[in-house]
Every structure is written in structure tokens, then in C-alpha cells.
Image (tube, rainbow, N blue to C red; front, side):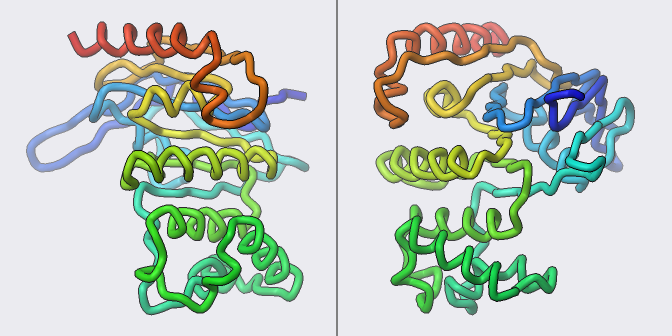
Length: 255
């Protein structure tokens, strides 16, 4: 039995409009192991977000295929967290984090209990009756993550979920969310422009070429860590070497 949870094989995709065709991906191939935290980096506009849209089923490959390996042969559940939290201002935080369960008619006493536990674990238990505008950016992102995790997805797709935050908040929230995700033993695919984020959070980094994108390089990340904090990752002796190698690949691609 494969230990992969998904595989994209020779996937190509183009966008079409009245002015012609733009090829975003061409012969893109990679797989993700169950429980792995994969980061994908590449030049701006190379098609990184298109990959997540394909995995989420919002788009379909024009060529190639995507294979999922779920338990009992079922497709794994997928959660998609975007750059912006997309919380609804007219709903309380409780109503926002339980929205997916409500839509799927799964707002059972057991699921409510699990959501309350997450709210407590992530420091939001005192804000359940607040509106999104009353929360900081970091708290809103935690609420968005709870909304996603409440549906118990097997795979989390993260499309630059920290980029709208200021730098200090971004460091704190990305570390917290990475810890939360790892404790939940989820498979993660993170799209990011932040190489520090990619190296410090992930188990493996894929570097894409410019459009049309395919995999140019791959780095398995192994950091010597005294603990699992983000600060420890960025101080690891291997950190700078990984960062420089990935930066060189991207720099060569942009030249």
C-alpha cells in the first residue's frame, strides 16, 4: 500500500479567454505523503494557487491526472484555507467557526464539543459572541483555521494564509498554526512566497519554474532542533544552507 495520500502526474492546465490561452502548469508531477507538511514556492504568477484549485476540485486538469489515496478507498477530505479569513461580519465567531458544520448538517453535540475544545485550546473561548471586526488579525486567522479543522479534513491546503498579517503577528500565528496542524496529524500543502516560512515549517519544499510551471527542484528539510518552536527552526545550523539553496534556485529562475 502506498504511503502517499495524493499524486499529481503530468498535469497540465491552461486558462482561456477572448485574448487567447495562458498555460499555467505543464507536465507537473509530485506526490505527498500522509502526514507530510509540504511547502511549494516559485516565481509570482507561476501557477501555485492553480495547483490548490486543482487539488480542491475547483478546476480539472486538461492533461494528466490527480490520484487520491484515502482510507477504505474513499477520497480524503480536503480543507482549503485562503489568504484572507473570509469571516462573515454579521455572524458571531461561534457562528463563523461552525458554518461548515451547519451547511453540512453536522452540527451535532459531539462536533460542537470538539469546536469548543479548539476554541479553548487556541485562546478564543472568550470571544465566541464577538464579531470578526472585534478580533485581531491573528485571532481571525485562528478562527478561520478552526472553521476548517471542524470538518476534520485529511488534507489541508494553505494558500499564503499568513501574508495579510504584520510581520510580528505572522511569526506568532504561523508558529501556532503549524503546531496545531502537526498535533492534529494533518497532511498539509502550503503555498508561500516566504522562504523562511517554507524552510522553518515544512518537511519538504518544492521549487517551481516560471509559467508554465513544473517542478524544478526539491528539498527535504531536516533541521537539528532543541524544541519544536519556530525560533528554534530559524536558528538551526542547517537553516541558512537550505534558505540559500532555495533562494539560488529561485534567483536563477527569475534571471
